[in-house]
Amino acid sequence: MATKHERLQQAWHRYDGDQGHQPTSARQAAEWAVAEGLLELPQIDPYDVLAGDMADALRAEIQTDDKGRRYRVNHAVRVTKGGVQYTFWGALGFAPYSHMQRAFAQRRDQIVGDCVQLKTDVEVYNDMNRGKQPEIQLILNFEEDVAERQHIENLPKKKRSGGNKRDKGAAA
Image (cartoon, rainbow, N blue to C red; front, side, top):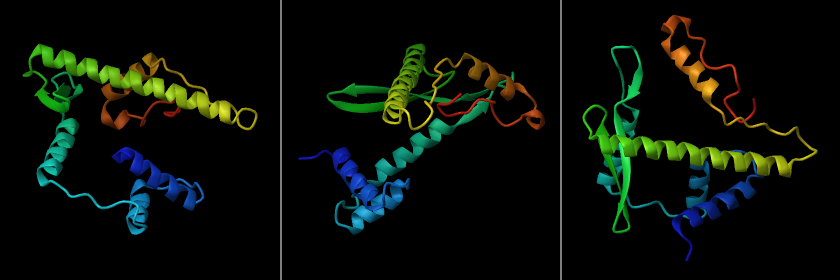
């Protein structure tokens, strides 16, 4: 039997093919899949919805320190116990050192994982389009980007130019 992700992917691919492979929203694909009888609307646990909303709010909470630096207040650590994944939240400045160390390490690992996948995706795209399109160049050294963004964030709001000069995508 197909997993939930596999069923969703299968429905997406049917919709994508039906629409001529034009970029579209997941919402449109989901509505189509339900109307076609490929997927059913889920039964919703209101506590799961509320907990998800709370996690989104915790993730989004930003404060500014006395030096004017904006920082995330709440930090998550994922832990698996008995095959079940739990997320524990702690507030910066109050959570134990071990929690914060683990939260930062997990976030860094997510970034590395995203970079590895992005590099693979760019390489595969370039291979698929070799000779048809210019190769997309990927720069994974973020030191200049981070320094530039920190500099921009330290400028008074009225002097901010709105972002870095480099393309925020894969090309540079």
